[in-house]
Image (cartoon, rainbow, N blue to C red; front, side):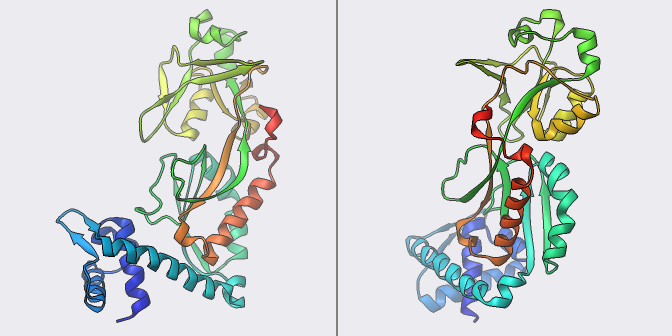
Amino acid sequence: MDQIQAMRIFARVVEAGTFTRAADSLQLPKASVTKHVQALEARLRVKLLNRTTRRVTVTADGAAYYDRTVRLLADFDDIEASMGQARSSPRGRLRVDVGSSVARLLIIPRLAQFQERFPDIQIDLGVSDRTVDLIGDNVDCVIRGGELADQSLVARRIGNLEFITVASPAYLARHGTPQHPLDLERGEGLHRSVIYFSPVSGRRYPLDFHKDGEVLELTGPSQLAVNDSNAYVSALQAGQGVGQITTFQAEQPIAEGRLVRVLPEWTQPLLPVYVVYPPNRHLSAKVRAFVDWAAELFAGDRLLQAPAGSS
C-alpha cells in the first residue's frame, strides 16, 4: 500500500463526507477509495471512520489522525514545492471558482496570460455568485467579496470594491431622476428598484445609502430581484429600475451611455475582495501561482483598489 496515497485518500473522505464524493474528486473508483481506507485502518489497527449508508463520520482516533495527516501532507507538499523545478514550473489541474462579473470582466479576458506563464496548469473555472464549499466541492481556491464567514480558511485580501447608484437613460426619461434615496422608497415619480438576492439563502439585499453619518437601507418598491451580478447589470441597462453596482461593473456601460450615475453624493461601504483557499492546500505551487497572479490582476486595476477613504 502506498502510505502517502492512502493518507491523501483518507483526508479527502473526511473532507468530502462520503466515499462517493471523495472518489469523484480524486477521479478514482469508489471501490479503490474504500479499499485504501480499509487497508489504512488495518495497518493502524484502529477504526478511523464510522460508515452509514448516506455519510461517513470521523471517530475520535480518526479525527486525531486526520489533524496530524493534514499537517504531514502539507509538509510533504512543501518539500516538493520548494524544489526549483516545482516552483518555477507548477503543474496539475486547478479548480477555481469566481463570481460571474469578475469572471467575465477580469479573469477570462486575461486568462491567456496565466496559461502562457504556467502552461502545465490546467484550470477548471467555476463561474457563479453562489458560495461554494471549498472542501466538499474539492475547490482549490475562490475569489469572493465580503467578510469571511469561515475563519478556518486562508484568505488574502486583494482588493476593495466601490459601489455606485445607477439607472438607464431610458428609465430616467420615463421616471425622472431621483433627488434623494427616499424618492425610491416613497415611489416619487413611480420610481422602483432592482434588488439583488442571495442564490443560497434567498436573502434580499437592500439598496444602501450613506452620507454624513446618515444610513438608509431601502428595499422597494421593486418588481424584480436578481441573483446573478451579470444579470443584475443587464436588468438595469434594460430600464428595470435603479440599482447599485461596482464602479468596476459600471465603467463601460457608463462610458457607452447605457447607464447613468444618480445620487452621487450618497455612497456605500467598500466591499473587500479575498482570494480564499483551504488551509491544507496553502503550500501547493499551483495554488500559489494562481493566487499571486490574481493579486497582480486586482492590483493593476484602479477600480478594484478603491482607497478606504473613498466610501
